[in-house]
Image (cartoon, rainbow, N blue to C red; front, side, top):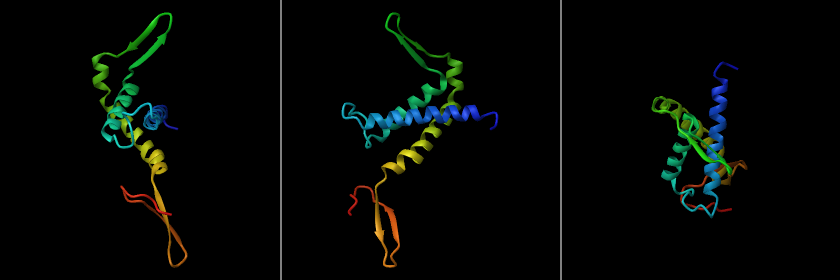
Length: 129
């Protein structure tokens, strides 16, 4: 592995955590603001999570002491733009490669030759057996 393998691992790990957190919220009835149909809100939440994970915004809570939010200085925030871009791309790759195919509806068609082919169902239509 190269010298950047730690950076790649960090982007993939936090990217997967963000994607699965968004998918978790989209599947919960008690969180009606995010669904499969709220694409713009989903992208905004993804951007916020990417930004928070890359530029070091963090929080901690201790019941006896209270909560603490740490936000880095302006120079770090401005310098993090490239890192945010890389994190957004990692999250999109994970979504497209893992979540997207799992939620895609397909229909299997048997051809006259006997071969079977799986085709995606057009948007707005239901798969028919």
